[in-house]
Amino acid sequence: MRGRICGTGSYLPEKYYDNNDIAKIVETSDAWIRERTGIVRRHVASGYETTVSMAVEAGRRALENGHVLPEKIDMILVSTITPNAVIPGVAFQVQAALGADRAVCFDLSAACSGFVFAYQTAQAYIAAGLYQTILLIGSETLSAINNWEDRSSCILFGDGAGAAVVQAEEGELYPSVAGSDGTMGHVLACESRVQNDWQQREADRKTYIDMDGTAVFKFAVRKMPEMAKSLMTQMHCTEADIDWFITHQANERIIEAIAKRLKSDIAKFPMNIAECGNTSSASIPILLDEMNRSGQLKGGQKIIMAGFGAGLSWGAVYMEWHA
Ligand code: COA
Image (cartoon, rainbow, N blue to C red; front, top):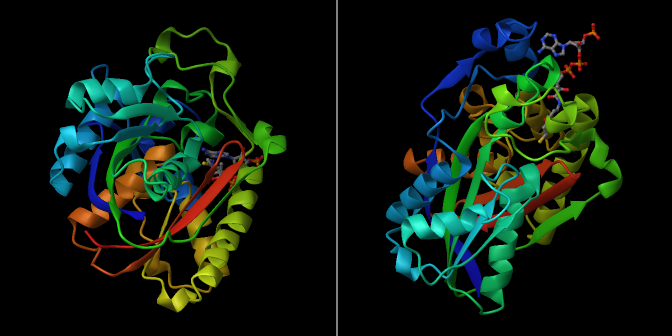
């Protein structure tokens, strides 16, 4: 058995900061941010929007899209690095809000690789015959851990949530790859937990995201094509056979460099980074939902979904679209 995505959903906060808004907070410019990252604006949660509330809405929309009732869900798996509370986890609060009484729930913390890791976890549970229907959600309130005094990192991140319903189907598991390197953890770190009211935080830099942007950039540009090539080798196919490379949205230049290294048409690399920035574990499912709802994803299309991020961590999966 293996899992297939049968429904997608997403939620983006109404409020956003465009680059000119950011330029009022730190010394930067719209031109610099666009040129170096491709980002134009990013959504920012207001007081009533939290990691939980966005996860609930994205999950609800995915269930509607997949015509799956909450009582059919066997498992809810939420990927997040910005949970509302230490306990209970976000997944439990989503369960309560959706009325998914039968579901087993837990959160997974692997930053920007989190959604891919959650997808791989779902595949493993389904292949083992333990569960049939799993709701996967990536939800993040990165504005709560952004260092709003650091122009090299605060320009990048946004808030939002994306979700996918994975259902068991007959067939062998498709290939996937993943890895971690804890010795490189320091290049992208945030040592304290989320302070929901960031304006009230003490000026403790450990509360904020601390990043060596160049190191992360180089790692991503090396690792992402490596993973895609490994999956294509395992599938005995080439870049020409892949319809979409759906990658974590961190920087437009990173995605362009990956396409170049794979000698692939950039049109196969959908992007929403201009509108959303980097939403960590929410970025892939938000993009997937946008593509699904706009009719870009067609039955039988071959997709490589790949993420990378803090840890350091990386993961990629091959899938064929059936929804
Ligand atoms: N506005 C204006 N200037 C800025 C700036 C900003 N927002 N941020 C940095 N600069 C300046 C630097 O201070 C530096 O100035 P200097 O040459 O006088 O020292 C100059 O721009 C170049 O800095 P550099 O860090 O080399 O820029 P870059 O082109 O590498 O872009 C990042 C910086 C952070 C955008 C880029 O490295 C990146 O996207 N890295 C990956 C980060 C990432 O994806 N993290 C999440 C992974 S999940």
